[in-house]
Length: 108
Image (cartoon, rainbow, N blue to C red):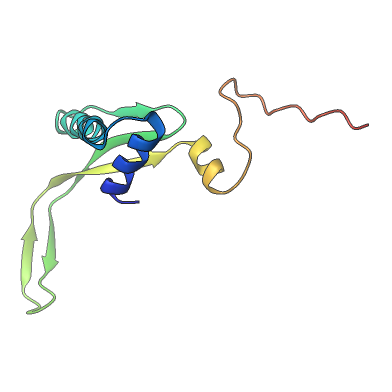
């Protein structure tokens, strides 16, 4: 799904104009970026969490010339999906937020 498709989906689901939906999607993305830049962790229950990880400086190689290149330390964004998201993607029944699996219907 592209960003444009996400905007169209939001527009359709909440019955707003495409422009209003675009503002909402942009605001969410901007908020995530601002929080990660500030070193904060973002946790969306039932979806996953975003955080940054520190990469140490290292020596790399230019694939074209084979020359050694110093790669500086940097922070990279990292996403960890929630168990509920993993289960939904794999087609398994999601466990409700109370942590108890749904009860099976009585057999007749």
